[in-house]
Image 1 (tube, rainbow, N blue to C red):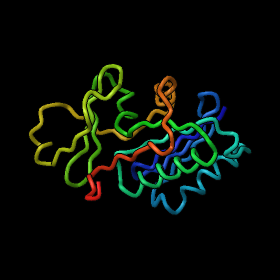
Image 2: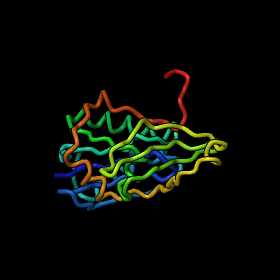
Image 3: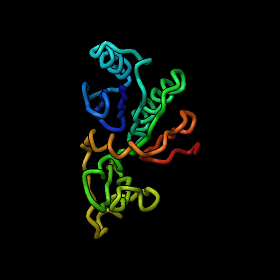
Image 4: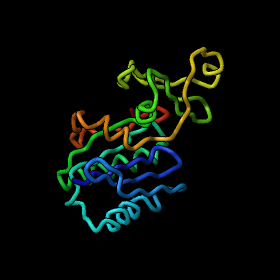
Length: 181
């Protein structure tokens, strides 16, 4: 059973293919995701000589991250999941990083501050995500982990017993709130 992993939240595009829980193919590229994202998925599938019909699941990182990057990854995951009736599991970029640590606070920076998540020992979110300005970050006493490296094996294992999300309910998390929300 193949599972497609999609992560477009940051500067690095990361797509991977799991077979029965083990990573069998992986593509990482830096730059403009919109120019090569879909081709990267196509290449990944072609390398294993499979099609979307061979997928039994999709894992998508839904942010927080760049507006365009997160939107592209989430929309493509939703489209594939909906059109091919493939179950989707969702994890935030902060939670994916937090899996490597015990009880922790993880952040992702932009030029004005950072989006923060506090995680319990079991890696579940302790409270809602929140945003701190650079000024607020400069006075905070707690250690915040700013790490962008995601361990795919840990993500897969963590999501094994988590519920699938219907494609219509997969929601992106952006670094900044936008006016239309």
